[in-house]
Amino acid sequence: QVQLVESGGGLVQAGGSLRLSCVASGRTFSNYVMGWFRQAPGKEREFVGSISGNGGNTYYADSVKGRFTISRDNAKNTVYLQMNSLKPEDTAVYYCAARSKLFGAMPGGEYAYWGQGTQVTVSS
Image (cartoon, rainbow, N blue to C red):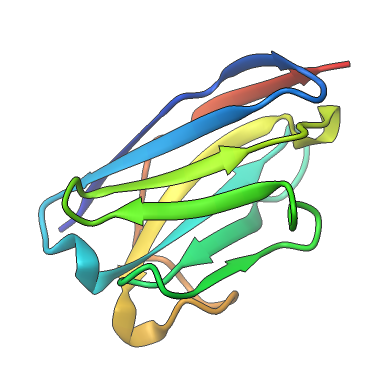
């Protein structure tokens, strides 16, 4: 079992930045691919990005590519989502998720563990 707790959300003006964190507990963190997802009101949850267990590979949705960066610190059991040049359409609840590294970090597929989410609101 893996427990995930996100933090770092908040209210920011368009063009600003936020960094989300997700701390994991329960198992060997490096054995897990970590993903970030978001869900805006009235919309389905969508993939934001993912990172492999050793941090060597990252993948991003086209909508955030070049603005968002995922990183991880396996010594701290933490994955980060650095969000720059934020837009109002980035407003959503952001979730981190984990799955075994055996399934790879490429987009698609299921994640077994989810955090509770953190709200990000970008004002225009």
